[in-house]
Length: 173
Image 1 (cartoon, rainbow, N blue to C red):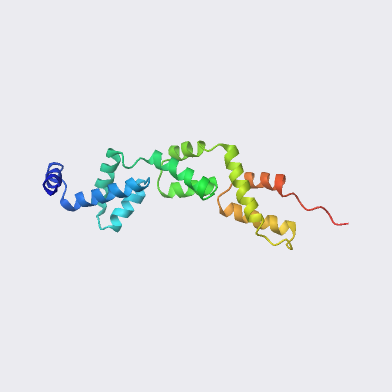
Image 2 (spheres, helix red, strand yellow):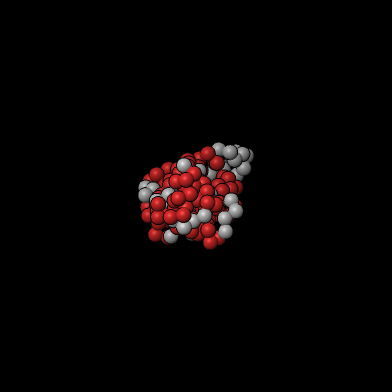
């Protein structure tokens, strides 16, 4: 085994250290979808130079271990469906990972609007029930808007939700 990996390293013109980092990065990418940025960061954490990490990342892309379109789809699905984030927060996070905008748009387009609204409704209902009933309706609505905005939901979606689900309290007589 050592001879074959050494031979591969010699043929491919990479050092044993780079082979070791490549193998470690392959395992890292096999466990969960990764993007170029996260793999480069991880390689640097493991002691690789920027030059070596770029070389390894390019090899991982060529071998199919890293696919940013696939990563964007998995990330959007996970963050929206599991962590209940809004589109704005997901887009912001994907941009910070330097995912191309067309992949972000494609991935977000795969989530049906009705499913997205149902997720928003579920998050809102759960949070709404945590607010003290002694607070006024206006205060509870204000807290809910702040919370949903911090989760990355868009203002028009939040306003539509408030109109349909959390209308102002009736006037007291």
